[in-house]
Image (cartoon, rainbow, N blue to C red):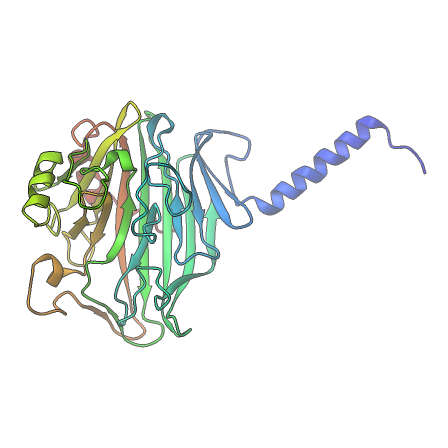
Length: 356
């Protein structure tokens, strides 16, 4: 057999490798440039890199619902709880369905899609409509079926995640949109506090610290702030817990909510913004002192303590669709340092992004 010169062998191998990469990598304008957003498809998830640094993985196969984990904040801080994706000492192992950053709901035509119980439904990945990297923004557009435990398809959706790194390395913007499609008949998004667009923050960011069962509540260093000015800190959360009532921000309506606290030696936070075009804006907030942080436009009877258990039901007639949009700001400091009120005004008045 004729021997291939070493230089030629290296060149052939390089060409083959580049060809392989072109087959598995999504459409991108930053393939050789670390700046911008790079989204890479692997066997079971998508890896999202911002300006050359890992930001999150998007999991969509063999999971009860799609989710992003972990969320990496300023300075490399891990801003979401690891459990149940990983076992880390010191973390509480409650609510195994709280998977970092996700969308789900507890009553969809009467079916539970929030928990991971045996009788709960699953949000099943059907395919990608788009995966694209970019200098300023990267997109993931994905299609799902909402499948009940008995295998019946209840509805379908189209979700878009748009990732944009901040210019100052202290913020990241994630625009999320979900379009529900009543593809299998009338669709009722039912009144339940268990939902919907959610984050489970890192344990060190909690307003109340994890404790042994039966121990008195202990204040953490986290803070919850609403656009209305209402807020919860450790002292107010302890007082609420001792009085056996919800913290002051839970179940309230506001245009945005910020949850911030320490991770290592950094003070960092999340803001979730409810788009003014969303149904029932401003939304209610299912935000908890133990780290759950969720915008929920459906749980009216729970949040307002109404007698009508279906007060918050939202019906989408067969064949029609309805879209919800949210913006997440991952930021340094508290809500004032991050100028969340100003950023919300920009979001509310800007053309819709995150939908391609």
